[in-house]
Every structure is written in structure tokens, then in C-alpha cells.
Length: 312
Image (cartoon, rainbow, N blue to C red):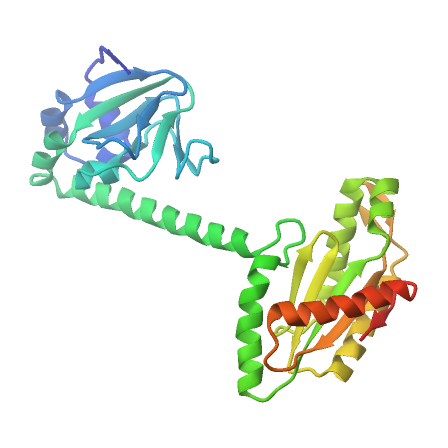
């Protein structure tokens, strides 16, 4: 960080979000406390390992914000006119994130003691800072929501993933047992998927998996749960449905894919796929692993019998 000369400019400060609508005489008192600095690309401005007593206002360039590690993807960008470090600046504690100059950047740096005194004379400045802090909190909440969503959803197909299946099973099996209702599981495997990939390419295979997910999910009830179990395997939980009813549903799902001989994709027209299905009905006190094992055994038999069929 290299300190540079800065021409004091009240008009420039008044255009920064933190100081919008703050009286000019208050800014005039504060302006001499600023120090301008140039930051090299990749220079770490804030780190969770070091306490921070400064507020940084970006005049030109940009800074990236990283949570947890610099190896992670940045979660936000500090643009010209915005500030960084306001949370640790206020509570005089370690920053909760890394802030790094992503390109050559010029920023104004202000020590916390210089601003604290001005709060008593400028309610508008306090309001501006509170609005910035609220924005940070909302952004942080959205990051948490996005992380939870990514943790339970398969990014390719949009279905629940294998990890989230355990939560769903625990909830639905408990509910069905309490209400003395049955529950069934369908385990599906795309037929000859390796050969499909070898012939048409892995990207075509991805589109085929999306076709399976979209076609089948649209035929399920809101209470049903479909998850991508891994690779070309899918699992469907059918609460309040016994084996006979589940067999009817499974056959309908299988036939709906069988009838799609080809489909449109960004790669052009691709051939459709079929699935083999294994069926198992829950018997208390079935664990998820036990139910999957029985459904998988039925699926293996369906494939042994010639594929594109349901067993169980």
C-alpha cells in the first residue's frame, strides 16, 4: 500500500454513497483526516487475521471480497464510490472476509476515531452507514441461502442431490410411520448410458439426464421427491403409496421416456433414452440404506431382464 497525494475535494466526497446528503461543513471538518493510497493488483487490504480500524472508500479500480479462503470464488465486488471494512471499522474487531484489490486501485482511508466524532453532529451520516450495514447483512443472508440451496440441489438437473435425500427420507418415513401410511421408492438407471456418452459425447449425455429429470419430475405429486443419486441414477420417494400404486406410477414414468424417440438440445436433435426401474416398498424400521439396497437389487434384476422395464 503506497500513500499518495490527494487533492481535497468536498464535492467528490459528497457523491460517495456514505456521505450523500451530509452537510458540507461536516465534510469540510472530516476531509483533512483522509489519506489516499494506491493498491497493487492482488494486494490484500483486509484479512480475518488482522484487526481493522480503517474504512476504505474506492475512488478508482475494484476490490473483490472472499469468504473463508482466497482460494474460494469472490462473493462480491467493491466498485468505485463504495466502501469496504465498515463492519470491522465499527466494532473494532477482525474482518469477517478478505478484501483484495482485483486491479490497480486508488482508495481513501479513514481511521475510525475520525468518523466516530462526526456521528454526534451528523444523523445523516449515521443513517447512511446503517443503510450500508443493512445491505451487507442482506447480502450475507443471500449468500447463506445460496449455499444451502447448492448443498441440497444437483446443479445439472435441478433435482435434490444424494446428500439431501437422507433428510427427505427421515422426514417422510417418520411422517408416514406416524400416520400408518405406506411409502415406496423407485430407483432408476438410464439404460446404456456409457454407450450414449461414447457415441454422442458427454455434453449430450448431460442433456439426456436433464431430459429424464424434467420429464419425470413434471409427472410427480408435490409431496413426491426426486433426487439424482449419482451419475445416471435417480431415486424417487413416493410417500403414502404402496407397492401396487408405485408400480403403476413407475410404469407410467418409464413409458413416458420410452415414447420420446428424440429431443431438441443446444447440440441439435439427440436420441431419447430409456430407463430401468427397481421398486421397493418401505417396511418399518427400514433405514434409507436398507430401502435403497432392496430397490437397487430390483433395479439390477430389471437390467438383467433386458432393460427398459420395471422390477419389484
